[in-house]
Length: 372
Image 1 (cartoon, helix red, strand yellow):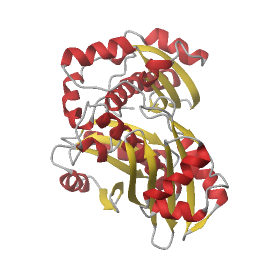
Image 2 (cartoon, helix red, strand yellow):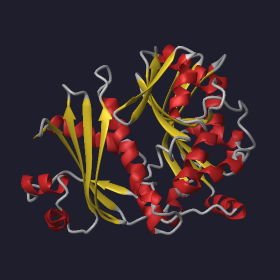
Image 3 (cartoon, rainbow, N blue to C red):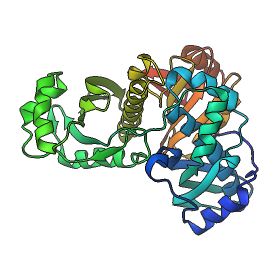
């Protein structure tokens, strides 16, 4: 959702409000139009009463969901060209909304929604602007989430790691994912070999799962070092690859690192597919669409101790000169993921935020924002 935006629902407001009230889909996405649904999208707003809060959350949420959709379809190398579409009303492109979950108080509204956009209208919009895009989904990828701590598999943590992936919009992604547990016929030495970059071990996965597109997502937790290392190893629709990333673990919210790792990983898979389909360049293979390109577009992990602190941080962030296209990509009780654009880069943004009592620091490649 956009933290600061219009409070009016827009031309489609009445119809969408009815969909939310009934908690049923106004329209569904299937087949070739599946990528035009942004599923399980978090929205939240505060207003003088519950009705106004819900209306604001819907208005801001549908606008932010449109931006997420455009970033999904457009290669990261062309994301800057999307700025020309900032004034496009999402209400004119919405086809339907479905409620997955919602809760509210007298002044707050928090929900997870599925926004379905009109595929033809979105395609026509991008073509008119001459912006390259990919709207064809890749073949379904089988992904095996594995969780290890100090090199040992932890079954109960592996379930939580799988649930993190399940919470993402895997069905409508450009690279749809089917989650599977590790089958007993895959020996531990094959898993270790793949994680170490030995591509020959991929044969064991292919034989076990009966398909060429199989990927391990091995999370290795090091609590003393406060670090989560993630290895993606196997073959997706773009080819065989091994990629390693490291994320900082916050002891106060240890699950946040795994949530961020999964979001970034899905963005990597989508970027690789867009490069293969020819809408992007080789740079897209290693670009993280969720994290943005270079220093201008940033993904921040925000830490807070309660909703009042979150509201204070988000208000200060939105009011910082130069911050544009601020969106919430995920929200939990003690953390949030936001994307934004800042032309001067993360280091200069850190200086600007420090003047407002906020601390932005680079923790193992992840930009973390909190109160000082």
